[in-house]
Length: 194
Image (tube, rainbow, N blue to C red):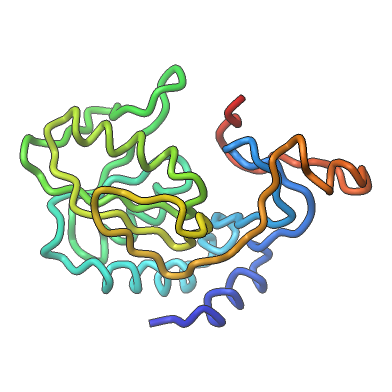
């Protein structure tokens, strides 16, 4: 199992831990951003991180793995490969998280949701609702980085490789905005919540 320092080293050396002034999907601002795609572009990093998630979960916990698009797709697919479990993804259709492309969850199937970074839990909670609507049984949630500071909970166990206490600011009280020295950047794939 990788320790926090080893994971941070992967993120830093791959340029995946960004510093600046970022608009998060939640609408919050932060001086730090985890761009997991930059660390996951290296197969050795992806395999190391996803092996640790797979080891935390174990193959008997689930029948199917679901990754929220876009960030969770790569992580979920590799965890699914390692555990030899069917892996699908949920994506937005007209702003609503759904299963498309013929993906289905059978009634009673045990589902684990695998994501790259947890901040507010919005995407994961939306996928939880999809699982419930399909008749699946939520069995767990797993992430590489938990930056929620323990404020996000789920009705099932949360497994994370690394918890990070990352500062966030409300847009109206952001000192980075008040300084106006560092431009605000929106690096994620989803529009923020207004």
